[in-house]
Image 1 (cartoon, rainbow, N blue to C red):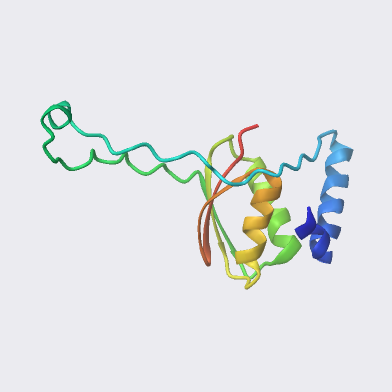
Image 2: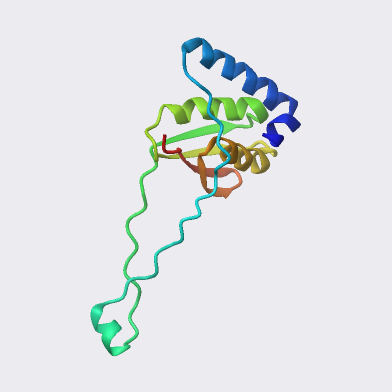
Length: 137
């Protein structure tokens, strides 16, 4: 919330979007979650390696999860970027992956803060490419 209050354009845009949602009968929910703290499982080894102490290579990792949707936001920034992102993520099922390309120089600060406020998980952030997992409702 402090990040939104700090940026005038975010604050005005957030209030406007929340007012529009209230007119449609939905609620704007803000969560202070955004970090996926689930530890990675240890690499799998064969039963033979476990009993003999033999060194084996870790099991193959599963195929990467498909990206549900992509959006090239160009140089769209600040409140406009997160409001459009909010709309696009709402159209996806819970847990879906969404890729956004954001060229705005403020995106490296804006997108992680926005994900933390809304409960979406920022899976990877390598400017200008951001991969976001839609929150579970």
